[in-house]
Every structure is written in C-alpha cells, then in structure tokens.
Length: 139
Image (cartoon, rainbow, N blue to C red; front, side):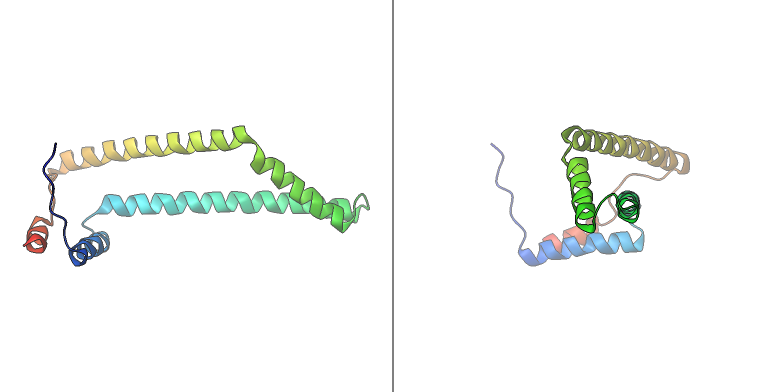
C-alpha cells in the first residue's frame, strides 16, 4: 500500500492551476496551445458541416413548399423527421466516434514524433521549467 500523500491547501492548488494558463500565455507549454488550437479547429469544422447540412435540408423543404407538394406544417415535420433519422442512426454515431478517436490518436502520435524530432534536432532538453515555483508553493 502506498503511503498517504499530503494534500496541498486549496489556495495552493488554485495557484498551480492558474500557473498552467500563464505557462500557455508565456509560451512555456506550446503543446497545450497546440491541443487547444486543434480542438477549436475541429469544433469549427463540425459546426460548419452541421450548418451546411441544415441549410440543404431547409432548402429542400422550402422547394417542396414552393412547388405546392407540402404545407409549411409538413415542411417542419419533414425537417424534424430528417434530423431525427440522421442523428438517430446508431452506426453513424459509432462510426463518427470511432473516426474521431482514431483521428485524434494519429494526430497525437504525429505531433509527438514531430515534437521529439524538433527537440532532438535543436538540442532542447525535456525538463520541467517550473520546479522552483513548485518548491516555493510546497514550502
């Protein structure tokens, strides 16, 4: 059994948590900034795709209303039924999740390989920069 580790007071934990943001801001943690940018990019792509899909479905429903093939109430039911079927497909959600996980894993591995290569080529050592700040907080 492992010995009990002392727990830092909540104020110290908050200081350490806030230091993560200053590390990103000051350029001490570029990998965290890169992860945040990748997440923002994927979110933007996903949002744009959903907007395009909803625009296409709305245009199809409006075209049917203009042609007199359905009423406005039928158009609303058509749009609701389409998205219910689209998001209700179990295999679509599973496939999307699987592809997202695989994509993130490959991106992570590729970024790690590139990062290690750049560090090896430039002679940068892997070490933690804020050990003195941690020691001051633990005191």
